[in-house]
Image (cartoon, rainbow, N blue to C red):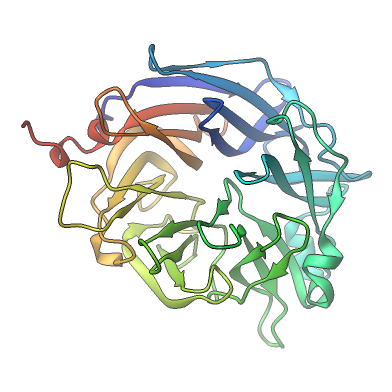
Length: 379
């Protein structure tokens, strides 16, 4: 099984003395800049995460390539005595503020330990930048203000991972996807539920939206629709052998019409996937004004063969295409970004993903026409 053509494929993080996991990608269109974030770890184990590191890439539209700069640590994105995990970047186009959300966990306390003891020690934090990620503010702990008493009702929680969302609504709301293990009464154990954190004042205050459904974990969100009919679309990892999707008509506060998406398979324990929305290509007609693209391993048994799926009629779960193959072999977590128009006139995308049994994190750049040539028949 061969993967299709791409514009660029480049390793941006390579394990050696340290391991790198949990990719997050952000594109700043005015600067033609990509920011690639990962966790730097002492080993591949979650408990061995240390801090978040960054590589900055410049997209040269004439050469159709991204030039990557040297790795740098986001040293401010830490709480003392805690390890930093799950980078979630977001750029507020109205204020020019770049947010990096993350979770902070004491020492090497594992997720399993928190689930076993039902004691939540995870913190929700952010750092911000006003110069596109060159310098960062001190860390801000949002746990008390954004979560409040519910923090004790959860065994643990996490954000993202991967990119967040700014809505095109009146307040230009910020949406941070997350999930929490709710402590259910015995004999039930803690169970995961996806949800979103929301800010309507450009990140000053945050509120918690309602839970999506039981057995939903790591998730991403995208805005779909047109005019006054915009929806927040959520796509979540599950242990149900398929992805779970839901939609919100009030900006991510409440989710409805939760569905199992059988076309989007999960391996036995699930895997993180990424979703972005983008404008329908101008040459296309008779379909939704916003399309969705989704990346995830395509093998139903193991984390193998990175695929990309297209939905031209979101949120219809049955409208997802069969996957186009982006890369063969071992792959896991990924994060997608829409990058405007490519050299062939079709939408352009960047994807940052884990490869080679977590030995490297790779950047791919491709166009919609490269992935789905059948959508662009010769004129």
